[in-house]
Length: 453
Image 1: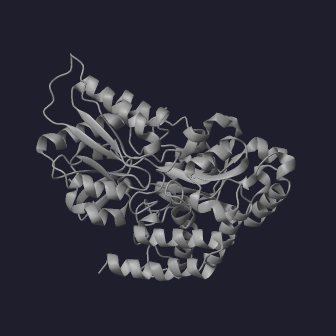
Image 2 (image 1 turned 45 degrees about the vertical axis):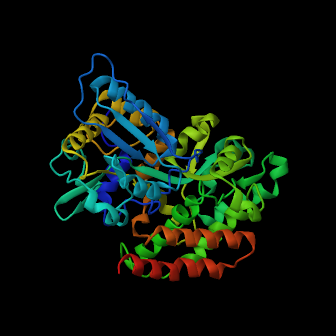
Image 3 (image 1 turned 90 degrees about the vertical axis):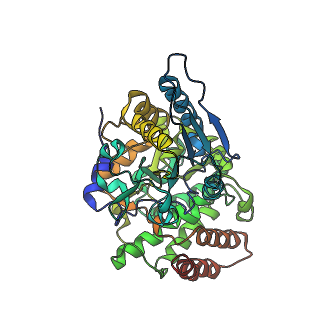
C-alpha cells in the first residue's frame, strides 16, 4: 500500500504545515533527532565503485547527512544507486549536534556538498542564498502537498523528506508489572502518580528508575533543550494565537519545570550525574529493562526494537496544561533537502536525479520506509513498518490533537545551549530554576535581536 499514512493527511488538513504546524527544527543546527545511540565523529563513505554495466556519469553527488542513526542506510542506498547508474554518490554524516558546524566547514571547500539540509524557516535564513530553486524539478512534483516545501518568494528552496513523531516511549511489560496500563495515564498528574510509585518500588520491580537518565551531553541534551522545550512554546503560541515571536513570555515555564523535575527525580541516576550521561546510556537503560519510560521519537525505533514491537508504547509528553487529555504526540519535520546552487550544472542534475530516484524507485522507497523507518511526503511512498509510526497514527485516528513542532522559531543554537546549560545546572544543584527562566525568556529576546539585526 502506498500513499500518505493517516497522521500526515490529518496534519495537512488540520492547519497549514509551515506557518502553523511549525515544521522543523529540533535544533537550529539540526542538532536534534540525530542523537540516537550514535554519537561518533563524522563518518564518510563513497559509492564510487560502479558496476561494469553502468554508464559513465557526467555529474556526482555529495550528500551531507545529519542523521547518525541512518548513516549506514544512506551509505547502502548510495552504493546501490551507483551500481545501477554509475553516478558517484558520497555520503558524509555529521556527528550528533555538529551539523551546522560541519556544514559551514564543508561549504568552504572546493568539493562542497551538492545536497545538504536545513531545519526549517530559521535554518533556511542562513542558507537560502545557496539553495537551488526546486520549483521546476521532478522531485517537487512528487510532493503530496505544497505544505512540505519551504519557499523564498516564488522559489522553492527546500523540501521536507521525512515526517517524524516523538513522545514518551514506554515498556508495556514493565508498566503492566507495576500494575498499570496506558489507560491509567491521561495527563501529567497521572504520569507523576505512576512514575512516583514505580520509583518508590524500583527494587521490587527490578528497575533502576521510572525514567531513563536525562543525559545532558551533546548526544542527548537536544531531547530536553529542544524537544521538551517545544511543549511550553507550543502552548504559549496556542494560547496567544501566534506562530512565532520575538519575545517569548514563558507562560508555561512552571509546567516545563514540573515535567523536568519528574524526569530527573524519578530517574535511573542521581541528577548531579546528568552532565556526563549520554544518549547511549539512556538507550542501554531502556533496552536493558532498567527504566519504564524513555523520551524519544519514531527515529529511535532501531535502537529499542529488541524489546519487541508488541512491547513498545508511546505516551504524549504531558506537562499539566488544561485539556491535555486530548493531546496527541509531537509531530513535524526538521529535515529539509537543499541542493547547492553553487555546484556545477552536471552535479546539480545528478543530485536531482538521485533524489527523484530515492522517492520514486522501489529500491529508494523501500529503503526509506523499511530500513530507515521513514514516513516520507511523496506520492510513491511506502507505508513504514515502524510500529511507533503506527502508534502515532492511532492517536490521530482517535481524534487527539498533535503537538506542532515549533522548533523553527527558536532564535538560535546559542539559545538552546543556554537553556541546556541552565537545565543541567539546576539538576546538579549549582543553579536554580530562575536561571532556566532567564535563559529561556531573556535569552530568547537577546538571540532573536542578534539574529534579526
